[in-house]
Length: 365
Image 1 (cartoon, rainbow, N blue to C red):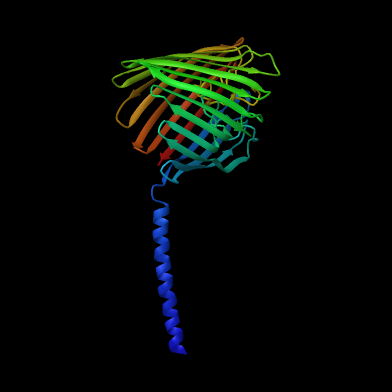
Image 2 (image 1 turned 135 degrees about the vertical axis):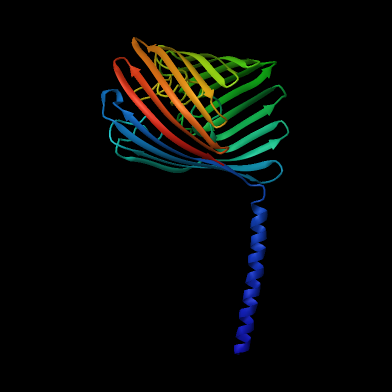
């Protein structure tokens, strides 16, 4: 009996070993071709005299991971996981990432599966089905659920989207987009309709001649329930000579606000230096900055392969209020995937002032 028990135990271990080996092989095959990318970013900030209010300290940790899993020759599954921990110290509300509506002294902790969609690629056709970033330049990474399709016709790509339950509006969004190039000129045009809410369009063109690039961009949004002038016009010229690069930019907004669907600070269609921009920088500005007329000069010098110095200045008016921002930054690229910088900015709005500083470390993989 004891001998049989020992044999049974040996057999079980052997079978278990074979099963574990088979599982390991299956797992290896399952993850073959899986692509994982993302970033880990840490920021600490200090705001001194926030427009006449109390000082504020803020630290923010962001972990962002994207997983791309091949399903077959034409289909991939893509998911994005994001964790953000914004720990706000004493003082006024933060403008520095996280949720600006969270009272100071509290934590804004979010963990979520932001994107999850199937990607189909077959020659010139690409289609996404699921929860994904709303395409275009008029939102700051807002998510919608539905279908996005693109067709590459050579020099031009055309596409369309139908998304519901989006973070931009509770209405279903329909959008068409076209982009491409003619010689040195790159063009983009997009029209977006949110049922019974708004119509919006974005036009962008830029051209590169040697080391110089010049471009213009215009966005306009018409709300169905309001007759408001919501628009943003941008123009810029940038170039580089040896170790020096610089951009001169102009921005103007409509009498009632800016032209994007989403008035977040970092919407690509809007202008932003750091504190001064055409998007929404406080909870009170629900449609961006109205009647803005401003210009900015932003220059960088590459001191070494790993160290660069940046200086920028912006000046303008929002209605009858003067706006200026002066910014300085030193960046250190420790390795290909590890970047750090120290930044300081002084932002003046009329006779009020906010001094803001930041240290950031970002690791990408």
